[in-house]
Amino acid sequence: MVHPERQKLLTELHARYIVAFSENNDSFEYFATEHFRLSGVYWGLTALALLGKLDALDGTQIVEWVLRCQRPGGGFGGSERHDAHLLYTLSALQILALYDELHRVDAGAVARYVASLQQPDGSFWGDEWGEVDTRFSYCALSALWLLDRLDSVDVGAAARYVAACKNFDGGFGSTPGNESHAGQVFTCVAALDIAGRLDLVDRDLLCWWLCERQTNSGGLNGRPEKLQDVCYSWWCLSALSILGRLHWIDQAALTDFVLDCQDENGGGISDRPEDQVDVYHTFFGIAGLSLMGRPGLAPIDPTFALPVETIERLRQRRRQGRAAAAGAAAQQEQQQGQAAAAGEAAQQQQQQQQQQQQQQQQQQQQSQQPVE
Image 1 (cartoon, rainbow, N blue to C red):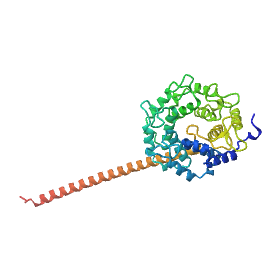
Image 2 (image 1 turned 90 degrees about the horizontal axis):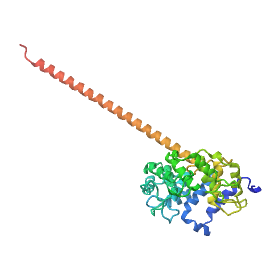
Image 3 (image 1 turned 90 degrees about the vertical axis):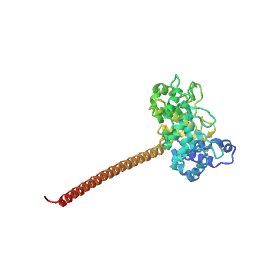
Image 4 (image 1 turned 120 degrees about the horizontal axis):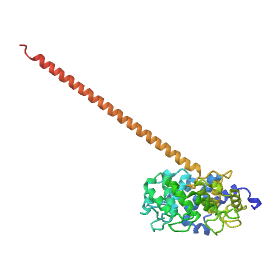
């Protein structure tokens, strides 16, 4: 049963918690999380966006900081003093997409960095040190989609590698043969969605496995015999949503579980009721509620983990750009056709003039001949 003071989504408290967390730069936690700060900023900002509070933080300042996290090779590090990694490259692009600032990065440089990490079997290293994980396959494809540079990598090979990580239960592991895990399921299903290869997913088998992650508490776990955790409200639901099976779980029970993990005093959401809140679980709890259509929350895209509005803006801009390019190409073709026709007409006119001149010369020659 939900705590009486947590039966509603504590929107204002959560927004204040995220803002206060972003401003607390002298705590042990601040320094301990420096190596993945870009992802933390993405979690907080996207949660604020879903709450309708994105303007609670200085977007200009954040964008400039994100750009300073880019490394010379094109990728982004978790913070200014850290090496580039696919995880943080995606987080950086997601933040820039939220603020409609993707044009600030050199898309070609980022695409070349991502492409440099793809291996012959289609997998991706997370960074130059060679760790392979299906998380990185998702990060690579998602980052390139945001930049409209999917053609920079072998998408077919990437999809085949992800499919090779599928298990007998329909789930996916981090590499071929590894145990199915709800977090990996999201990365694999979303990667295959971006690649246009959802046909490689055993939909019903996988979705039954995902539904079995719901416990008596209403919360979801990541694999059998594990505790429920708010973050799986995203990892499980996003895959179910992509595959059209979101209605297969008890959404009311899950909603109650997420709401009961709120801190009614300081805001934020924890992994389980009465535990310590953090930005990670705050975002994924809010994202899960958004997927279930919670009133007052902006809808979230289950594939890209960004507000639907952000993704639709990118899609519309691409449609407009491609339509403009097609129109320009058609106009150029028309102009070339007109120029060719004009050239042909001029050539014909020149030929006619030459023929007339020849006829005149012949007539003159004939008139000058003596009459016998």
